[in-house]
Length: 163
Image (cartoon, rainbow, N blue to C red):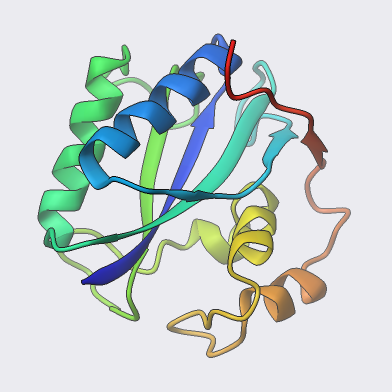
């Protein structure tokens, strides 16, 4: 079994797509451990603010199969393939880590967004503060503590999981 972390984001009908994404992830992976939901300004483009969180789960799927499942879930929820890299999203799911694997194929792991973006690092630090980043060898709590907090605007938001 591999422990995986998945980032979840949406800036289009955010409440709906975050809930729907988590439900779909539960259907494929079973029990999820979830961070709080955070709101952050769009990065790289002018657009609506995002809701972001991180989920952790265990899986026997390969990295490639995990990525395929995430793409299927995104597509099911209206993700438009071939759109600009920095644009609004109904649902954005990214495999952040797969155990302590460091690789370039089938995707780059660990994802660079972990240390670059507050909307990934803060939820990671909340969800798995003592877990160690495969490249930096620092805990996510240590990485968050050292992160320049003025770099990106992000704040926790109250989120109701049931309608």
